Length: 82
Image (tube, rainbow, N blue to C red):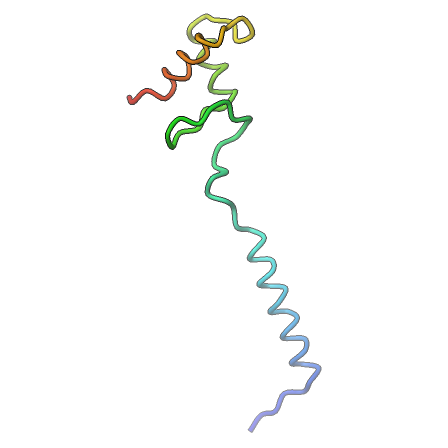
């Protein structure tokens, strides 16, 4: 019969706790899959400032000169089914 010393059990418990804590640190939230500042939520889609600026650039519209109705039309273009 093998009996472990209290020092060994304490060390094993500490290593186990540290392992659990490190494993928990690596988990990511599922909703954080996008990068950048969010401009709009349309249904389950997220539109970021980068996507908005790219779409404005492709349509030759300066992002800083776009009206609200222009931004809405660009967002609807981004979120349209393809």
